Image 1 (tube, helix red, strand yellow):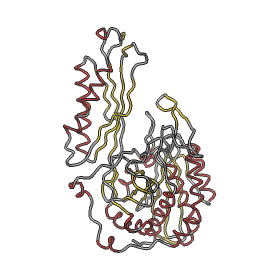
Image 2 (cartoon, rainbow, N blue to C red):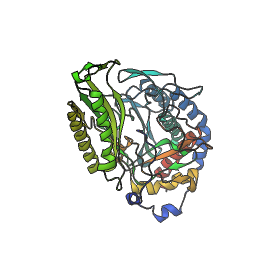
Image 3 (cartoon, rainbow, N blue to C red):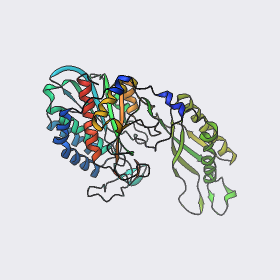
Image 4 (tube, rainbow, N blue to C red):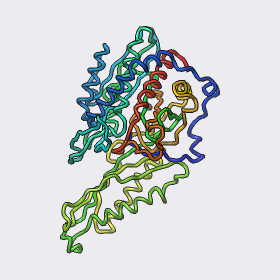
Length: 442
């Protein structure tokens, strides 16, 4: 998940989400006994899996060992995994003993270029190369939990396979955090490479552990849930000179500083955020190598988050315009790649499916513990699946009780700390949703 903290909703955004039908509000099914039994049977194994993946994280499009372990575990269950989809994606199909619907369940597997700062016995010590630099690698967004949970669901479903109606596709996806520069990956590439060519589900489900919600709670909403995400790259090109003679060249550092400052007005002064929120963020800047040399160029990368296509395109144009003209005012020029790749669309939960399956989530944690979160500026490439089939994506609280979720280290933080109680909640929630859907309930 391309993470961002929650943003308070305006009253107008409530119109984006349909109200739950009365039947869905008034009738909450009980937690299935087979879900309770499965939780007890596989809980310890899910914890072990999660800790293994946490200790051995791999960056996007580099999940070779993770994918190998996932495939091995699926084979132990008697399944026949398909590997190598979108580089390191793994899928498997569980065919029930009775006819019924087809659905898909997804977990992402990649980690982030983050150096862990937690004192866990299974803390990551891994390093890798990212954008030409040696970096720490950490499951700072919880994908290790998602992978462990889906393996637990797989084991539980196989145990009841003879009585299971329908078919379930397990999707272990690489590169949710985004493929490295010059590469393709993630959900879009899995679809391009035929994920649904021979198995088209009628519904798809996914989850994400979330630091802004306490453990024991689940967040879900109909309609738009997470923002569209686009990345950009700006390079301001000046002319190198000695630091003692700035007039002898064109200083791209000063020019880029002005570009970054002026770009803050795109959202604050040029975008109507009373309708929907938007974000323009600069995430990295690189230029120069020595204290007394003004370099030839400076490069920045960043992200744009939106919920509306018209707003999205206008921000692209505004950022190009600001970069071009501000740089020119300094005597520099700019190479503006806005966006610099295909981004993620808005993640939209199918309203009818979400209304139907929300009672299943309430059955797991209680009605009072299922909340409707505000629109999230974080993004998810689960959105690509949701454009293909009706889908529901929900958040599983991961911050320990007694810790304020609003001040706890967020997803993507080097101090992100998952309360492992979230593993059990996620397992029971995903399994309950799966069984209720397959059996035609909720």
